[in-house]
Figure 1 (spheres, rainbow, N blue to C red):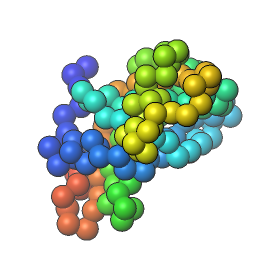
Figure 2 (figure 1 turned 90 degrees about the vertical axis):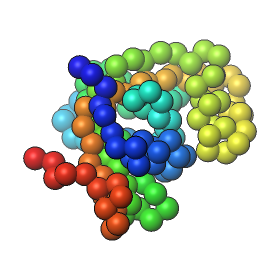
Figure 3 (figure 1 turned 180 degrees about the vertical axis):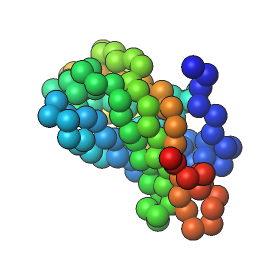
Length: 140
């Protein structure tokens, strides 16, 4: 499947270090959301977590996830849904350093942490803002 094509204004919004929330499906079928750092590169979303996080196991069992990226005014947001297409140990901490620098300007402090990265390929999206700049066509 070709990468999801997004309007330039949405692509630019996703490149900013905005707050985000990721939703995963628990084994009992209920969705669970948690705040997360993310990065957007070449049509993929990078997230990173400690190896002990429950959501990592949930992603391995069911790769369908959703990520909502929020502006300072959270009415202005973009939600993407898709699948985790790659999971890899972040042995060198390069991915968590990348995310930490994006959000804090500094490298990740815990150099002994066992971190894992997940790459998400969006299949669809929904956007909203009062100006219509990020708004998408209705999702059916």
